[in-house]
Image (tube, rainbow, N blue to C red; front, side, top):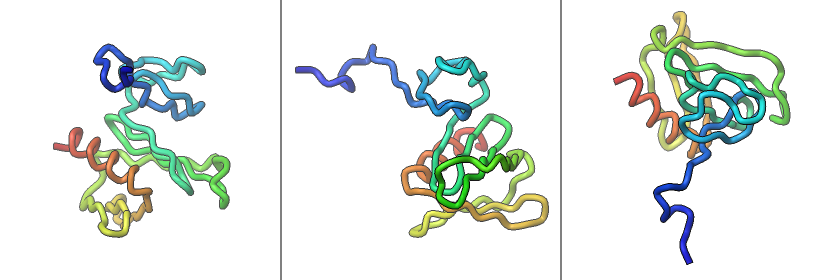
Amino acid sequence: MTHPDDDPEMISFELICPECGVSNPENAEYCLVCERDLRNTLLFLEDDSFDLEITTESIIEYRKNFWGTSRTGKVIKYPLSELSNLEFGSPITRFKFDFNGKRHVIPLKNENMKSLKEVLKKILD
């Protein structure tokens, strides 16, 4: 019996649409369901109190309600060119950075911290 990971022809559906939450193939240009433009989305992370979209130009934070069940409508956009002093906390998983003269701290799940670190390293280096 073969495992899907053993087949190099299998398509990976790891690009999550920030609009509708559907998984799309890694190189998708548009969401399979809502047709949102995904060409600029590098990574989308769902966390407890917010969702984070990482694009080639910015980190976009979508705030959630207290219970983390739905978005509040509050969106904060952090242009990557304006971020400085990036730190990835350990053992407590906190992503810290300076933006507009203030220190920002975003708590992340372990798996999200790892993904964020990998993507930012690729686009900021």
